[in-house]
Image (cartoon, rainbow, N blue to C red; front, side):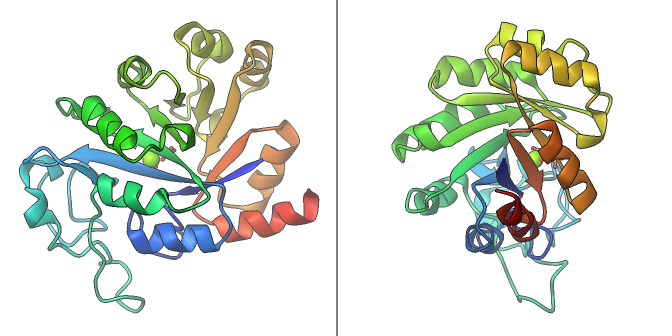
Length: 242
Ligand code: G3P
Ligand code: MG
């Protein structure tokens, strides 16, 4: 079972920052999950929220700021004791770093609340520029974005993100649209979903698995991966199992 670091090692470090990504690799993760948006000046940027203020010391929507403005905001506002400042990374900067790491990446296209123009094309171009196709997968709650990624980078896998309500006949659905993986909220996986994914050969990567009981359940159910804020704790637990 793969350990996928959710927004990097976000349980202990400022999410979606290079620090959290570096710490996730040190923790022994197999893959890093991160979220992307488009800035006012058309740059692909790594951040979770559409609107700043929670983890980033700023205000207003990401789309209304240029990257020059965003890079001056502190993405570590929740960790004053740990670090003074972490910037919002460009996706390009992440890729330049990831090219030298022995990990894969799960890029979540944040097109569920606001649809960023050409986010798929811009993201694909960067992935190609850094030659990361073999180690990159895409996920989104907006499955039209995934269909577009399949057109642009057919060699990259896609995972359909689904809320805690789950989706009946998930395996058929993913298989029909060419999505290799089903990415459910870990609380929303029924026996029917498990069976359907098994029947169609669809792999399950569940989020966000942060406690040991849920980790054990994911392992027993044969998930392909867990998306977790605690990659070190998951890695240590798994190393005793595998
Ligand atoms: O990829 C799993 C998870 O990241 C989906 O939800 O809101 O944490 O991006 P969210
Ligand atoms: Mg995400």
